[in-house]
Structure formats: structure tokens, C-alpha cells
Image 1 (cartoon, rainbow, N blue to C red):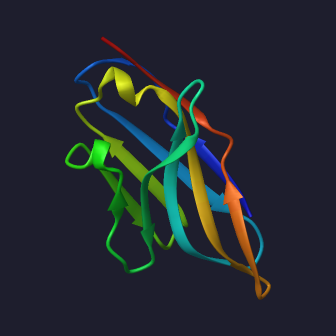
Image 2: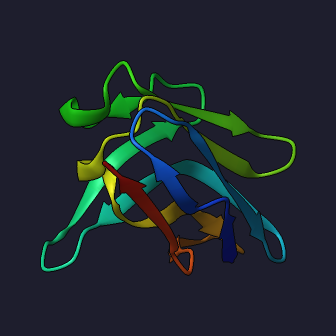
Image 3: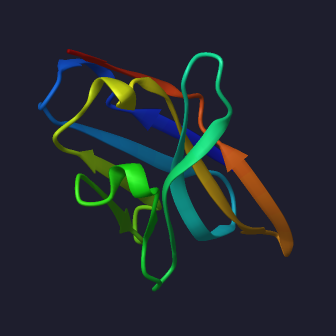
Length: 118
């Protein structure tokens, strides 16, 4: 299962960006999708994630500013990022986990750069 992310860019503090990620492959079911981010010199951290039919989980640093949403029919996940701050600057990675042909899988997108200038 492949994940293709899009939507990063360079914005000023206070602006908004929307990231999208689409899953593709053969005979798969996704149970959970989300977003992680990795700033230079730091580990990859969870931003937001949601299980099918579940309540989204957000990192404390983005609560109230970011919203994750799923399109189950299209196997996509989006991240609406509002009131962006310079500390949100990072490479954002789409994440998905589920089953394909009765075998579990986890998959990562290629990463999309988000840069927020002050």
C-alpha cells in the first residue's frame, strides 16, 4: 500500500495550510491514518491520528489549531493546519496501517515540507 502526500509549502506565521494524503494499492483496508512530523535534528513525532470511527488524537502542541479528517471512501486523510507557528516547521509524513490480503501493514508517505516563517 502506497501513501502519496501533498500540500506542503512556505507560509507566514498565522496562515493556514492543508495537507492531503491518498492511499493506493490492491485489496487493502485501512484501520488508522494520521500525520507525523520531523523537524531538523529531532525525532519523528505524532501530530494527529484517527482510527476508523474513532475520535482523533492530537499532539498537545496542535490542539485547537489542526484538524484531521478522513474520507473513508477515497482512502484519504487530510490535515487542516490553522494559525501556523514557526515551530510547526517540519517535514510532515502521512501514516497508515491496516490489512492487505489478510496481512497487517504499516505504510509511510514520502514526506512533505512545511515551513512557517516568523
